[in-house]
Amino acid sequence: MKRAPEHLINLIEPIVEGMGYACVGIEYNPHPKHGLLRIYIDSPDGVQVDDCSKVSHQISGILDVEDPIQGNYQLEVSSPGADRPFFYVHQFEQFTGSTVLVNLYQSNAGRKKITGVIEKVVDGIITLREAEQIFEVPFDTISKARLVPDYSIEKGGRNGK
Image 1 (cartoon, one colour):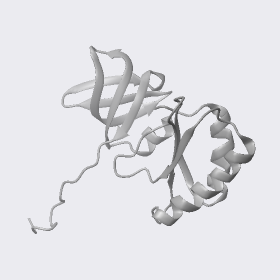
Image 2 (image 1 turned 90 degrees about the vertical axis):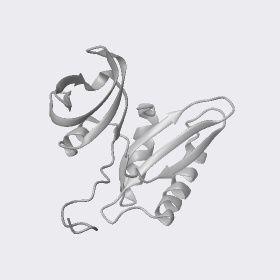
Image 3 (image 1 turned 180 degrees about the vertical axis):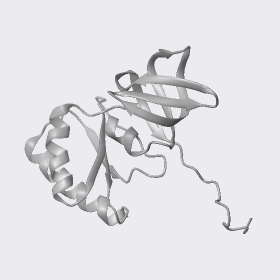
Image 4 (image 1 turned 90 degrees about the horizontal axis):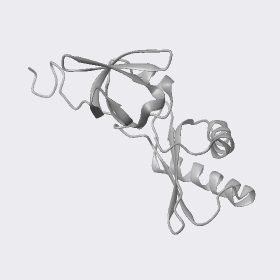
């Protein structure tokens, strides 16, 4: 989770939400020559290229006026996709029962990467089940987290089995 600094989140989130989209999260990777500001948006109807373009245009104008970022950077607006990144504890709660891949700042039971099913979230502790092993992962130890898409075909799917 290369979460953007609070001042960027506080500037951008209200604009995105005011346009009728959910602001899933904001990543900021500063670099003197090619920094990146990536904003993930979502809506109940899904996100199309036109939606990303509208938000990009609006945010770009605000960033030009407010000038909160030093140096050069690229602005990207994207849907979260099937492998959506997680930025907040409530996103883990929302996807309880789903599989996530988490990268950790420090090892947990000798692991720095865990792919597991979200069992529960209590007081900022995410409980993940990987096979028969249970991991209790404090949210603040997660450096990056993404949903693992489930592309399996349900019973009665394409093959009718």
